[in-house]
Image (cartoon, rainbow, N blue to C red; front, side):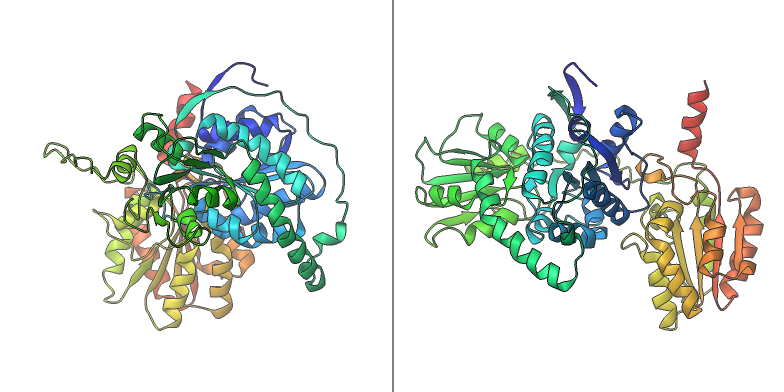
Length: 529
């Protein structure tokens, strides 16, 4: 497909490797910092490669598992909190096993640049007995993806490929390898494994656990795990994934003691035990939570001191940097650069002309008329309604939580209880909450703020576009209480009136303010020029 050397994002390197591995489909829901992998495949893969966005990460994982069942390869892409959504399918995929290679790309977000938490997806891999790859460079991201598909088929398990924001969104030159053709359809050798009745699940659980020593040995022998104990020292260093780059920068590329680079898991305990026999202390450098540091303490003798994030030698939260890694090695903290008084903070804000602005302008004024009124919001660019000048929402927790939280608050006696959810988030995980509310006849007002796209992640297609009225009717919302408005300043009086009427209605009502995202509209206009 692509013959020459390329300058690619880490996400794009994974995507190219997946194409070159002969995938039959990519399955994903857009979420920063993972989105570019799917977009690359949409742009460059053959037309026979499925690449449409899925409704959520769970449906993505399950569809990919279906691809695997018929013997073909699939890539699943998501951000770290998306792995929570598909955890049921992901964890059970180790119990069914795989037929065609199945690789799950998860982009973690240390420092929470665009996320609600800093969770480390490596815990999911360990929890589900799945092998894990963690590249340190874009070329490794390419090479590991190719290796991950091979390993997935060899051991019959899904493989987790973990990247972090800095790798996902930085560029480097990639040298591709010869591409493979997609496999023909072929069915599992043990089709009974895919029917997880308790008798099957118990057997498969034992089989998967019995595989772990073999999978760990592969990590010990992996070319992606580098162990160098040629230089004696009282301190050893373990660097994981992208942290290897920070270590090399901190020490100028000159090995100054036993060093282990970990990029393939399960943790190669034999290599760590060997390092522990040669040193008095081990410094663990990893971007994310102390996943390896905690495990190392259970592997080595008590006389060897383990340092890292838990010990305070590295920051407990946030991204690693070359500076704080160097400080942990040398014991000398880097000087903190003071923020200039001339640098003015620029918090994020809704775009000028955005329809969400008109919704919040009305909602803020109407809800202020009720002493106990609360607005439960959701994940999307409309979450910026929490900031000035609106300050119009009271909660944002996870995808789809707005409707269910509003329902719970109403169940507890709150009035009025309002939910604000975006179009893409509604189809992702809001519909089931609305069904609960309808079944309970909860006194809530649901605002589906429809800007006709998945705006926050770059304008991908939204699964429910032009279907929301029908979806709400099908769920059981009274058609007399499904209202559609166009959120523009000229319609302010109409929006205010509808909000007042539906808030006062003691049942489930849905208001759909619909106007296209300004950014999406601008992109369409540029394409026409």
